[in-house]
Length: 411
Image 1 (cartoon, one colour):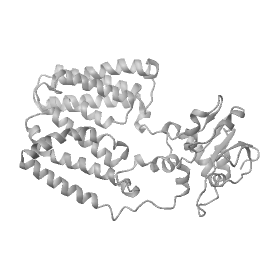
Image 2 (image 1 turned 180 degrees about the horizontal axis):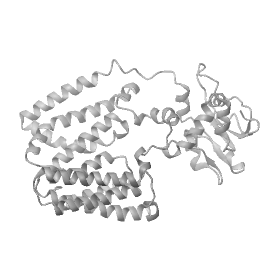
Image 3 (image 1 turned 90 degrees about the vertical axis):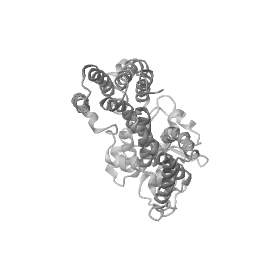
Image 4 (image 1 turned 30 degrees about the vertical axis):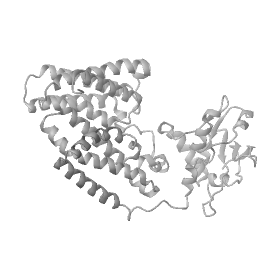
């Protein structure tokens, strides 16, 4: 059974490894870490030993995997968007305080156990906030409002499932709906297991539910819910075959409500516009198979280019060449210069954005005639020229256009 000392240790190791790899599943891992503590408060059998083993697994992974995979030096740094000192502090503090609470508190009264764990949690959060105040701004603190509005807010994975209606991705809507129906049908089983104090079942159900909610709120999570929600499918199927009335009713009601709610947005969510905007063109991967060899004939320098082209060129750049930005939150300062340089209609803004760069690269691409042409990006993408940009590679046989920036003349 997963509700065991070994299961707790494995869960702690898994949580630690997941955080080392990335922070995306932090809300789910929080449920796994908090669940045994809540079970201990409620007096569930073996919950204390499982909480201790989970804390031991998390501490073990924090020290060993953090040291081996990240390195001691980086583990001591403050990086709010990656596993580093703030998270190591929280995990080691969590492990120490939960073991302390479980071992020293002898009272079986839930109120006392809850008070002790709550005070430990508040203390840990307060100390962490004092030691690492910059992380209170979240992992995307480097993204300013301009980059957020022009890039992050337009990325599909940052939007809700309603974006699937706009883009016509019906199969994803159907898949999410089926997962909702499965969880709805498992509600009678959840009620029974909760009364039986089956903490493992309740924790897994909570993980599945939160994963599904996250997928509805942000489509970046859509690949995760099925891995957990479908664990309940054999249980639901077995109870339906046995004509368990509560499960059958929950299945029918869940299907009806899900279908109704799934059809509800149709009149309100418009289909994707047929005419792309300038920002849509800016985000297109129009340079996916171009010859980057002309860059090898140029002196080393820094290139400002749209993020999609920068990503394409990244592993094709000759020694000494760098690009300004790719679509990654840590590259937000470079992305700000990219947006200011290519999309701003103010000459001073463009000049400041281009100041650190030696070259400019863009792709020739046919834009719609009614797309405004008063930006550097629109002019160059259509094949036009710009004062202060000296062509160094601009062949009609290739969509890639590379210019040397003459800062004295560039406006």
